[in-house]
Length: 433
Ligand code: URA
Image 1 (cartoon, helix red, strand yellow):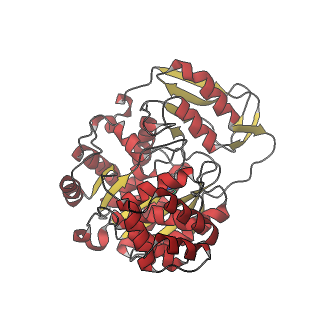
Image 2 (cartoon, rainbow, N blue to C red):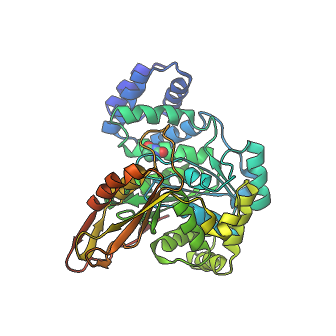
Image 3 (cartoon, protein in one colour):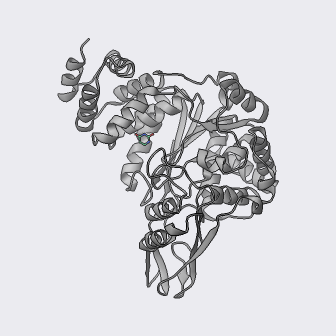
């Protein structure tokens, strides 16, 4: 087999066989196929697309390109969730303990934040003592004992995706549904869970800016995941404004704790509960209505918060900060942003708010940047709220006072304040099963 022939076949829009796709992924991972041929492959896929059969073969080959996690000992109880990324998206911190308190087994690997979106691993590292790196044995033992462990992505999981993603990033080939599907779903397959719920976000702070594109991606990922033998469903959710009120690592953990303590409802509660409902419904094969009752009950009775403490404690974290969130280390500077004029907040561009939080130290511009766990933004107002001139709209937190002016400018550029009613936007646009 020759890579040249595979490239020519794809270029003319013909369907590749499973063997040809496996040949490409194996050769590229090992280094016998060079970057320039892999780049030509990605570009040909951008133009010619891929059939479901090809996408499933690509996903499967990428999933098997490195280590895989064997969760077969948990049978149908294992469940994972993936979000395409957002601003203020701390739903994993809320739904993992909820579903685990209801008998599901969560062996989760999460990423770090980059650009305007945050990462669950960074958020958890704001809890003093929390270990985001465990050996495979420790990881699986903890899932066995407590029903839940959450770590950073380990060494050699999907090396083909690591190489291909970096290549796509510099060859303008990120933007292809089969390539995004295989990238995301290969990581989920390798991580081993039988049940997978996807949170595909749409709007100003999302990777997919329009609902139409987000829906196409969600449908593709669900179909491919199912054809690879997993139970998969997807929620299409709004990311036109930040989710909840807090953006920034320890600030988001505090907000997640408040939701689990039953102290906060609103959009964050609704998206977290809806995702947890779908996870429980898949694992237990029960109706979404019954699953939702179980999920809400786990919050109301304190069972989910107790599970959060058990999980964080098992992973070395100091649980006293969860009982009393005032014990989290505080940023040295807190600065109130005031409304430049009165009216109704018509827009709050989530991407710009994520970027303002990153300027304060909460996020990374490049992969190696350190982050300030106490930095970020707490909103006092959200889209649709009325404000008077000089009302506080948000508080900026940072340890780097020099960043405040630029962050405030960025924050204010995210806002549109005007007159008239703001139509209520749907939080959950669609569920794809
Ligand atoms: N996230 C991924 O992990 N892969 C993509 O291709 C796009 C977003």
